[in-house]
Image (spheres, rainbow, N blue to C red):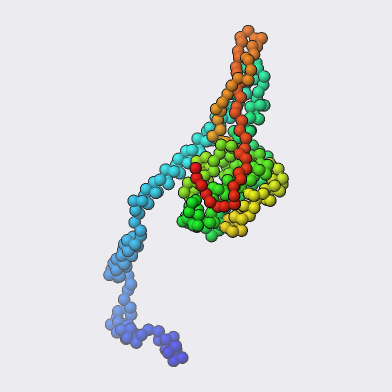
Length: 311
């Protein structure tokens, strides 16, 4: 208590107190000023030394990091350009379909507009809207975004990651459950679509997908869910959730939209009959075009394994 009392009553050390008294007796301030030129110079020098030390401790960019940054910038620019071109192609495709319908009406032959629209729907060339369900898949919460390969050396994915093989099995299960049209993250799946992987990325028709993976399936939502859950794909999805902690959410909706397949194009066409001559003074005969139809891929008979193959 004596020490605490002394510190509270006389906080200044005896030597410093004596020096302050001598300065006061000589008519000087009891303490030197902190705004002297020497103090300012020392403060500036100390700050400069701290800045130099921090700059030297910062990791210097390597040649590999610079190349990686340049590649990322180029990839992002090309992806943006590709998205813009896809939107332009879709707009021009709509104009082409309108001109086709007008040409068919003016040809004097049978009106095949309805037939062409049905074939475009079957081929996945046009957007569709209707009831259906969405299935959202995402990696396990504990999975690192840049994790290394785990126990699946054939695929290069960790156990908690969604793989292209998982998407293949689930999509085929939805086809088998009665889905009429399916898209993944806005990419329409047709009979010619391919779900593959490239390193740590999942690609659909050479377009990379980012997590989470949202699968949109049009059709009877309740009927599809009842058929999907007890099927092989539904049990496989349950196994992914239980063993690998992969997150999945399935929800039905009365109004969903899947886009058209931008890669779908007319490859085969032939006249459907002999030209019809109109009674007008000028005769014209325009052959009608018949588009090749495609059907959804049938469900695959894959076994419940998480091995991945690339083609």
